[in-house]
Amino acid sequence: MQIAVPKEIKNHEYRVALTPSGARELVGRGHAVTVQAGAGEGAGFHDAAYEAAGARLEADVAKVWGEAELILKVKEPQAEEVARLAKGQTLFTYLHLAAEETLTRGLMESGATCIAYETVTDRQGGLPLLAPMSTVAGRMAVQAGAHSLEKAQGGAGVLLPGVPGVAPAKVAVIGGGVVGENAARMALGLGAEVTVLDTSIPRLETLDDRYQGRMKTVFSTADAIDEAVRECDLIVGAVLIPGAAAPKLITREMLAEMKPGSVLVDVAIDQGGCFETSRPTTHAEPTYIVDGVVHYCVANMPGAVARTSTQALTNATLPFVRALADKGWRQALADDPHFTAGLNVHDGQVTYQAVAEAFGLEYIAPDKLLG
Image (cartoon, rainbow, N blue to C red; front, side, top):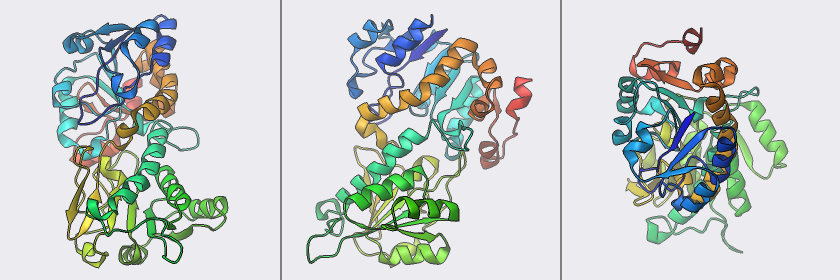
């Protein structure tokens, strides 16, 4: 199969969809891998390493896309990339379509088969291709939040762990999944006072047991979120509804109750954000202030630690890429119902229910396409 790895063009996105090691695996299975020249430079993977792995380098972006049967990316395709997609091609990347109607319709018009990393499932009900980046984003959220609390960044001038004689900052993490646990773990490790809010009692029990009560666990209700808003210096939004838009848990009116210079970090921004005042930002300008509250809403947080993120992503995606390359998308998905859950768009049809519902589009069950 002809596999292409284009260079990411989203603002300050340094990751690449495949490491040289991953390319070697695919070439060894008889597939042709074309990597756009310079695609891995931002993550520390140089062109020579891809050539040594047996991949072909191509400087012409039109050829990279035009000759491909399977296209591997990290972030959702930008407008100029959507225009390059064609019927018969398969795109495998993060899509987050429920918050992007223009992108959804663009992919439909392309006629391509689009499989989203973030909706592939596993036997335990987890999201194995979202998990590595969720881990990175969760850990980075507290790092970014701590920096944003500094006075020079518009924050209140609070040191997360405090010092002897001065209380540490209070951190609330809304959502106790992969992102939330990693954010809480980082905040706890830095010495903050940490509270995790979630609507799953079993999940709260797991966290309480795992961390031996060192972090508070609270059942998430409107009252509990109100209390966190009033008391906390840093709030991390880590709520995920797979494939669907994130719920708005903190409204504009609630900002008036927050401490001046407090910080909101919205890790759910790819899915539309879980704060009403959230809007996507970039690593070039990561924050903005609304009513005295600093908002950090970078939509590709793991891109800032591109080498770690690229390695973690390839580790997770490579078995699925091998299946697509060896069998073709139709057979690969038919053989694995958990992989089937990743199919979002095919030949102009929306095949993921939450995306169809978000924009009032017709939904076609993947099983019908797979026969």
